[in-house]
Length: 357
Ligand code: NAD
Image (tube, rainbow, N blue to C red; front, side):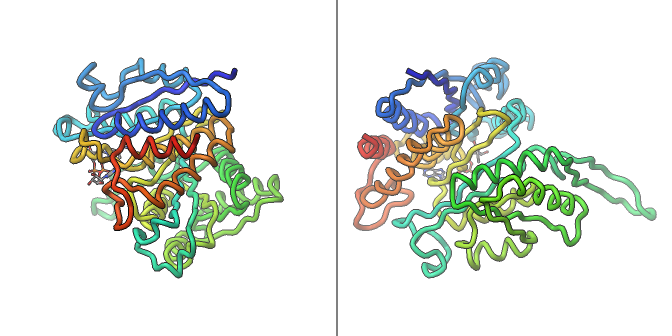
């Protein structure tokens, strides 16, 4: 029987409650498909600060590197809000992403049919459902480029630099095309090639990578137009490929179209199959420990883990289908509507597991 290792970073607030539900779902699928998962718990965020004095202890980095995949709950909370920046829980999050070389961020923006009313976009624009994947470059570009302050014509000035190397563009483009092959085989490259030289190199490189993917359709949009098209006609998108800064903005815009924060999963991938999977929401300290948190974003993140780190497309699809099905009848309080059963975090996890069996 094949054995996989997952390191769990449950973190703070609702983190432990929601990760527990995702683990239940993974275990059901392991039984069903005949594989075994070995879990290791490691500390990240506030719990790590309390136990060791730092948000990302070296043992956590080692435990993540030794795993096939990492599943993260969330970090942060009022208790640690007054610590200096490098000692705050969120510093642990940035630290683990960089320690694992996670250069590709995948953020699906999915509207499940039964949750259409949570979207701020009109029904006729969404249609039956919506499923967009934003693939954002995560470790290069202007957030990491040279920056500084200087004087220009006697006036104080500041600058930041957008720079990408061809290999950096090639590897993120390949991720986007590979992801599109598992979906509807369409990539929309988003850049600002009408103005920026870095975008022109980006586009040239994407075009070259595309030659290796003749089965995937490619089109290009300038970022200003892409921002507009996301609300005007989001159904035209399958996979959006873009740089760090444009992806930062567009992935948040796309997730707002989906509406419910408790439903949004994400994956951050490195070279090879190691990936870190986490819901996009935070640790929700206002509801922690009450058993009311929505575990579906974390369960969907576990589905991405199966798809992208374990290559288990069928099992991943079963998670997506179980989540879509459970929403027809049961909801946690954050997405509850008249006519549905109001369930707790653990009950939602149990219902998903029952559907997976
Ligand atoms: P948040 O996402 O934790 O919460 C925002 C609102 O959404 C809250 O009302 C919360 O109750 C609700 N919410 C979030 N997830 C939910 C879920 N699964 N089910 C039901 N309701 C949910 O954002 P915030 O309040 O700005 O931040 C709280 C803490 O989380 C802060 O310390 C922040 O730094 C941290 N944070 C961590 C991450 C992460 O770990 N990736 C991301 C964002 C914020």
